[in-house]
Image (cartoon, rainbow, N blue to C red):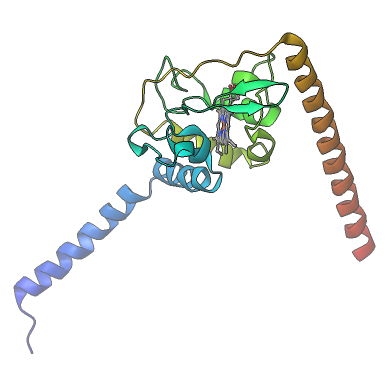
Amino acid sequence: MGRSPSRIAAALAVLLLTPAVATAQSSPADKQVARGKYLVNLGGCNDCHTPGYFLGKPDQARYLGGSDVGFEMPGLGTFMPPNLTPDKDTGLGSWTEDMFVRAVRTGRHMGGNGRPILPPMPWPNVGQLSDGDIKAVFAFLQNIPAIRNDVPAPKVPDAVMDGIAASYDKMMKKMHAQAAAQAAQGANTAVAQR
Ligand code: HEC
């Protein structure tokens, strides 16, 4: 029944190795990227932003590299889901985290003050994630292979753009009012429960 020295040595080696492996697997940056991957899967970004998806053959070698099929929105134009990979010229490689957070929170192209991000990009849904989750999505997107693929920019008459921007502003006002009302209701309930 005696423990052989080699067994003890093996057990010790496992004990010594385990913590090192555990830290390598769960650094905060890795955890953030893993969370981002989870959210990107849940958000169905792949459905619209990976080429071939709408033709029944998603090209996973060009994962999130930009669609080759556009959405025709009656009376508005045809909008193509762009390249979300970290390619500097044709993807999100030159975007900052801050630009990404602002883009999905405000629905403005590249998080700026210009044109609205066009439908059917579900930015109002993505924009309801917490700051931490939006940043995790961005961290994941910056960690996938960069694919060079320039998706054509939308061609939309100014008047149509203005109409979409106005409808977004209205929607945002409504969302903010609802959030404020809910917060007030929450406060009232808290008071009533005391
Ligand atoms: C239903 C289809 C659809 C889904 C699902 C979708 N997108 Fe998009 N996305 C689009 C389209 C279309 C555009 C182009 C809009 C434009 O040019 O204004 C776009 C644009 C974008 C842009 C560029 C915005 C800009 O400033 O120009 C980003 C970033 C983006 N999507 C991220 C995502 C992420 C992340 C997800 C998943 C959480 C996602 N999209 C899911 C259709 C989609």
